[in-house]
Length: 415
Image (cartoon, rainbow, N blue to C red; front, side):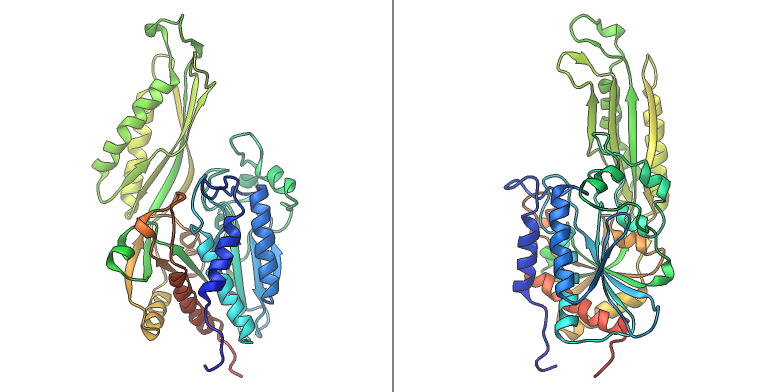
């Protein structure tokens, strides 16, 4: 081991700081929506670093970025390591990028230590995990695995009516490139993520070995009424879409509580039309995010939500529900979980098993290949806000585990 490079806290900090500059809201957190100018700036940086570390770079028809180190076995499946690089509006610098940066560190260590794998190593930077621009979320991984097909992708539009294809072309990406890949080309997928919760920090444990990921669904509810003048339309003659929508939203917390077993429901996005101060709203569109560790409780909450939405459809009010995303709870690969625990112990890093209450690209890949995931602590448990922060030393520790794990999984050739 003498003379071999190890994960660099300074290098990690440099990458995080560089990517944090690519935001549409300087000084107010990271806002990097898919196929925006900030996306283009970030991908240019990531591609440059991938090439610097000796990787062959390509993009697919979704704009996902792959940096590949070929293996010695012809046409062997790859070990993929990575995460996403998009953000929520006014989010933090670590949700997603920490995982991409850890993957870059693994590539750097393979390159600078002159390692030659038998199975290829691929560093992956994924788009639209958050769903902040086109809804649903997990788009990059769903696209790679074929869960989002060509027709479904063509139908995606942002709140301004711009299609995903139009947005891609605007920053020079090619939606005509191949999209889904054969699962046989993937030997494993590894993802590092900040915990986005308080458990690891409170226990003062640097590594969380993820054993399972919560199930989730995202619904889009549309409530239609009739526009009218705010001053001249009597209260008993109104079909106010916002009032009807508010009745639904107000009932959701109780609905989730009754479902039990940690079920949660969130309305995070709401659009009112025509959105005039003196106009009765004639349409409201809002999201409902439902999560639970048990599939039957997700299903139950979805059914109850649909009943609730239908219950306000009277007196000129019409409602509809569209399911944008549905992911079952996922157990991750036991072999990789065991490997991560062994490597943590070997490096003297305290670790603990943990379940994820947030959805991640790892849950999508878990139906198609062997998946392992690590969490690192989040300061004060905060995420999806400008205050989001994780220690680069923890990222470096996780990168070391990934590096050793990748050496094992790619069967690095010993010189």
